[in-house]
Image (cartoon, rainbow, N blue to C red; front, side, top):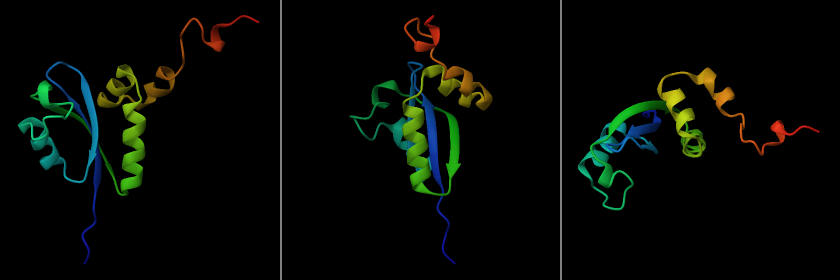
Length: 107
């Protein structure tokens, strides 16, 4: 019987309170690598220790990679919404509130 692979999108909270988003098929090993500073060029290297604050599992790697890319483009507030399991807040946090937005123009 073939072992089913699982893929994970994770968010780490770094020692400087910034967030790092990644994808892996071995969350325990990847978390250890981040905290041990295996890669000197990694975003987390000078921001250790890191804390795992979000984890989402996927069956297919392409879905995991697509979600990782999406989350990496999100604002801090959107990332914190999913960290706090407030997925319903994402829609409201996606609305552009800039003064220059077409939503704020009076025609």
